[in-house]
Image (cartoon, rainbow, N blue to C red; front, side, top):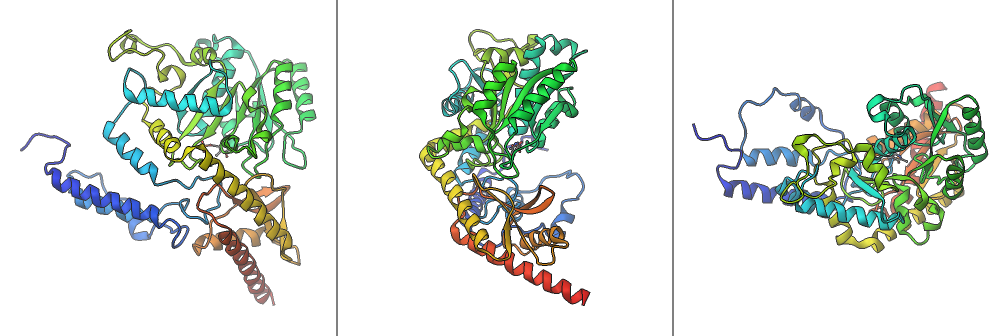
Length: 483
Ligand SMILES: *Cc1c(COP(=O)(O)O)cnc(C)c1O
């Protein structure tokens, strides 16, 4: 038996399989606008994905065939009519960065090597983009969920004096505040940090789905009166339901006055700061103590890629630093370069996510990224107008950014929720478009989120046409059944 190398036995065979694979990947991206939006994985392929652990390997050619077979079965977010949740549309440039990253096989936990400098550059760009001070720090992470955990740990540890890293939160009953429209990742972070998700107070919103700041002040007062320890207030820059942006300027005033850490969840909305038209509405974001946002949403870096920025690099470092003897820095040589990324987050081994972000900014530049964001907002306004002009559709929330929530409003008013849920499922199953649903003021809404650089106005025309058509078909089918 030959030696157990994992390198190809026949490099030229491997090379030609790889070139074919690259072409298939590029074909997929080049034809992103064609065909169905979502195609469920066929039963045969689901069954094939329940095989036993492979004992012997297959050829590169067979392997590439399996990979190619998988290509059509994504959630559909590379398609111009994917409007569900908040997904970025991806871009072909990511393929180049991922190939390079895989070839380097870099581990960005620390040490002194090229990849580390790329991540530092990306973080410096983010700092400039968001208007954070020079002594702030950051980390590239999987997404806003992870960024939030890191940011809130810094907030917690700073409040409790870092002793809690060893002793736990002890007798303190920490509490924090976010709007009732804030994302579920906040409660999850409270849970993970031992604070408990009930300690995240959900402050009611005004008619525009922004946090009611009067209610916030009362909640803080009440908690203080009960001996609790308020430590953080969280602003949302682009809420997941409707795209609302909290009044970040006033929130930072309140945070300063109350001596609270201000965290901003800017998962998709914060990146709109690149647009000179939208920027003003994010004013105050640069005053945050920490900020979490994603590259994989409105900037379309291929999944996954997010960022946490912390205003005080010192606090950030004190929150995660402390390395054992086998990870000490050496002043020079490969183990140089303190501090390491591991000193800013919970992960030691880390992949080279920064690479695809770096190439993304280099390839496209911020002007084009901003333009794509602005176009999405114009498209949302266009869709809003179409809904207002329609006799069968009703708008359910103000459209301020890139999200439009509406519903088909049947005459009898009964089962409207059910009807709209069915419309969305039909759109998805027919492969026409992929909006999602949410509930606003107790009403089920068809939710169209446009974080998509491939969407065009005609895609929205088709969506409205199909919602009206499917809606009336469902209504007449039902009245037939009842009659
Ligand atoms: C998507 C989203 C999150 C979670 O971000 P992930 O990158 O999915 O972890 C948090 N907050 C808001 C407002 C979001 O839209």
